[in-house]
Amino acid sequence: QVQLVESGGGLVQAGGSLRLSCAASGVIQSINSMGWHRQAPGGERELVATITSGGSTNYADSVKGRFTISRDNVKNTVYLQMNSLKPEDTAVYYCNAQIVTFVTRSFWGQGTQVTVSS
Image 1 (tube, rainbow, N blue to C red):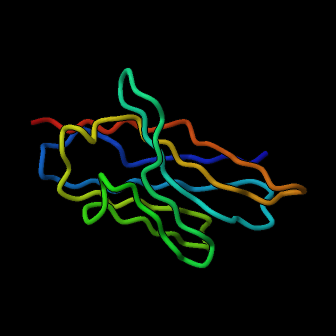
Image 2 (image 1 turned 45 degrees about the horizontal axis):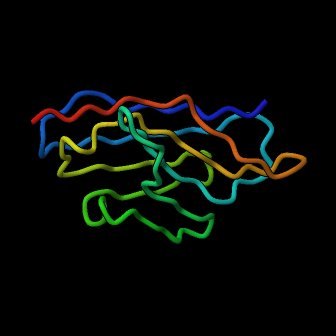
Image 3 (image 1 turned 120 degrees about the horizontal axis):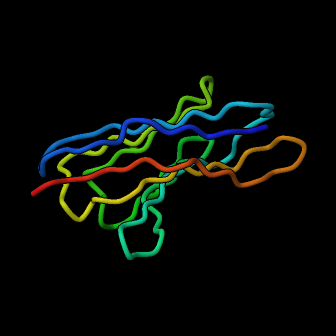
C-alpha cells in the first residue's frame, strides 16, 4: 500500500514563508515525477510545481521566483519551499507522485491547508 503523507501547512502572515514536505511510503520500485497542486475555496485544483526524477523543475507563473520545489530520492520525499507568501496563495496543497510499483500509478496525498493572512 503506497501512501503520500504531507506536512508543514499552517497559518502565516503575508510575506512569510512555509515549507511543505511529502513523504512516500510503501512498496515502491521508483518514483518518476513528483509535484504539488493546490485548490483554493471555490476553485479548481491547479498545478503549482513539478520535479522529475532527474531534478528538472516546472512552475506555475504565479509562483515563479517565490516557490522552490526539491526532492530527496533516498527519502522518497518532495518539498515545497514557499517564500513571499500572498493571501492568494491560500489553498489546500496536495502532493502528487508517479510511483512505480508493479505498474506506474498516480498517487495523491490527503492535502495540507495553507492560509496566508493579509
